[in-house]
Length: 178
Image (cartoon, rainbow, N blue to C red):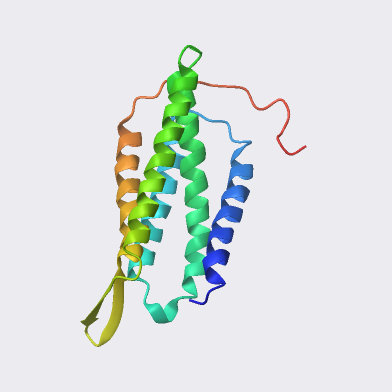
């Protein structure tokens, strides 16, 4: 991929995440709908992760389509996981700032560690020949494909087995984009 793709692919991911987040703002959430949307985001991430790992280098333009799917998956999983946090915290405001703050802190630290690991292995590639096709599996490709796919699978299993209380909230009084 050319150098402009290093900026274009993340931009596509962020724009698609924003669009899906805006669409999700009007959704009436219930416990089963949270689990369903979260699992849909996890499935999209698993498919995207497999696409990143298995995509041959000569078909690099498909990465733009994969980035659209990644953006949608990110928004689905992020919005629903924050909603699940809200359901688990409930009406008790004692300690809710600690819950949200600690989860945000763990998110930032884990992303920083992952970025550090990926950057430290930047450029190490193993070339493998298989049935006449040559493909390179770099640590970056495996780290951006397999790790999120595996984490998405584990989180979907955890979300599916979680017992969420069924809360029926009313719709928003005012839409966010009025």
